[in-house]
Picture 1 (cartoon, helix red, strand yellow):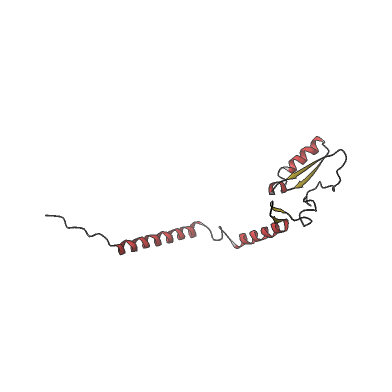
Picture 2 (cartoon, rainbow, N blue to C red):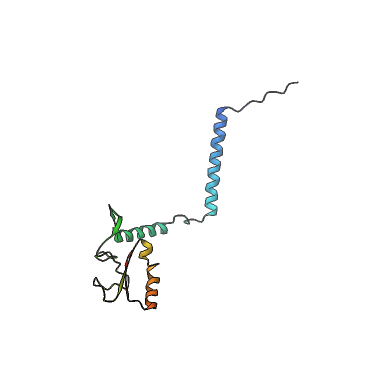
Length: 137
């Protein structure tokens, strides 16, 4: 006796099954994310406020520049007329002190934070080098 022929599912059935599977997958992913990741962990209102405050600080510090990409805001709250940081301690004016070596550091935010400049300044002080260190990071 021949086997009865099995009926194949139609296109409509296949589409409904695909939609149901996709919906179930999205719902499970959403549920997993809500259970495993605490509320506000990814992007909380506090984080948004922090990003906004940081953007305002950066806007007072640098400006767009067609040639360089960005440049310091001269004579602003962060940089003097020559692009040197106001907050850096060894800023002795424009006139170079006699017998001193002047080191000028140019760079990005790493230079501005004095990650390299401060240890070199301490090294110069320990070695008794007469150096003026200018930070234009």
